[in-house]
Length: 249
Image (tube, rainbow, N blue to C red; front, side, top):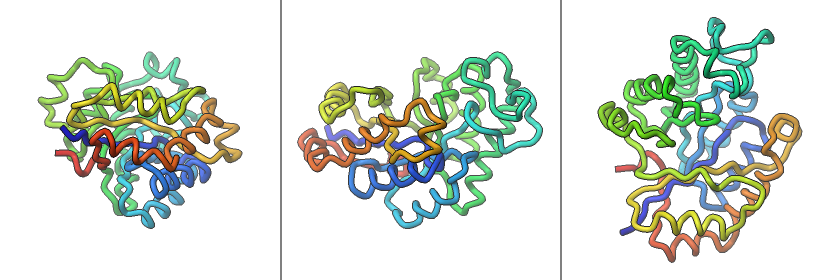
């Protein structure tokens, strides 16, 4: 069986270094898909780059734990400075009505650029939380887009909502010790799986990323692996077809 593989680069729009790293990983490597953080400073730049690379699928990376919300009236989601709560605090402070309002605002902001997101995922995987998953399922159905499958046993709910996804998802291409062999080991875990998404974070390092993210220098290594001259042949010898979420059956 040929495995349909989506290699998604998270955090599009975070900074120009991130944007250029994702575009390079697509144009010169194996990244087929990315997801946009609509509340970040370089969203417009990211959309401009995406226009020049029509083969790159662009979805939305819903944000609840980084930067500021797009909505003015979501008090349960922000601290005294108006920024989102940390991942440590957000789940016990949030109001689900505020979450739905802010996520809808982010989706509508994406649509305002004249594009429909190819799919939905989220920063820090917040959409997998038991209180947030029903909201995101409803939004995925409302906007008729696929949703990243992530660490939820609630398969029945996902399928009842009529929401498409890959059969499998892997988040382990992440950390200090990654190599081309790391990517191959991930692929070998899913031999015979109909469809798989692998999460990645390639980037060039710039000041906003270096100062703002604890996961910065490692992204340059991801970029090097995903654009390695040998990476495509390693995929080809495993009967893997690179696709976007738009090409899911």
